[in-house]
Length: 246
Image (cartoon, rainbow, N blue to C red; front, side, top):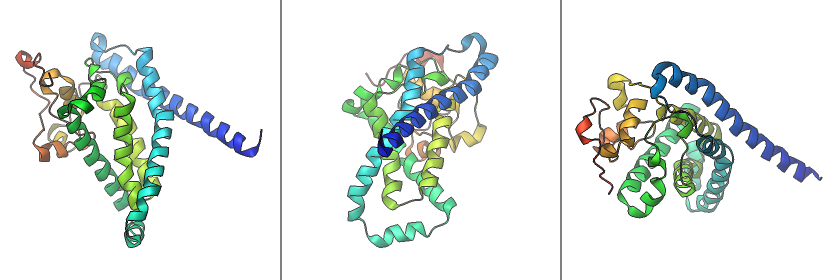
């Protein structure tokens, strides 16, 4: 085996291990919390959901990163050189904030379109088969839906030449926070939920009657600005069977 083949094999193994570690760490954190705090209300992990979680948080991210790099390489030539130089001169914290905002705006817009445009809804509806919230099903996505999110969220930052460490920081934050948002935990941040999403807020979005609200990923203030914010309490049981998408 030559050096390039050995490097490729090591990379493939490292990605495999990283996805496995992500599943194990997520399980060690959120599964006991669901069992302790929610008891019989907690949904038991399914093998299929664990497989989704492992694949998308390992090879899925790897494939997505490759697509982002290719698009960024092709499109960066159309941007002024001074723009990239200006971005690289900015402090790391500012680059990280910009990377987060760019990604979250894309998540909000693409998610909202996925509920309004029938073509995108065909892919996104896979995620909405998740009704009983659980950490293990947070990555239940159609591949098209997943790559629309991951590529679109990270391409703007790559195009601008934002520090890769700040992009990696966002991805790590988003990965674990998304698992928490889909967990069956009765958590709300009070007034701060209008700024940063909570599990209770995202649970509202997965109820059929409220699927056209709370589109944001981490930053729920985008829902406030977009007029799609729905407070996580109280939930009126008489409207839970309404299905706006049909």
